[in-house]
Image (cartoon, rainbow, N blue to C red; front, side):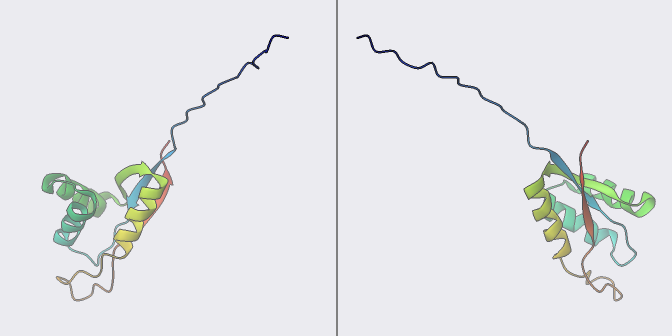
Length: 104
């Protein structure tokens, strides 16, 4: 009796994970130097780009500082929240704040 091999249905469904924005919120308790330093250290932005983002958050409000996977976005948000107070400014009581939003 001949042996028959069942047909295999191999189907690959590749999906790209949704992207998320890390959005830095403005406040008056951190200096430009603090924001620039933080963006350079946490996100690897060059000084010119970090300055542009610091200026944008100061002048217009919330600014996207990174777009990445949800897991990395959550990590970066935590790092912003844990960065600490701005030693250059006496009234600075803690870190800056950031939110996450889906990238459309």
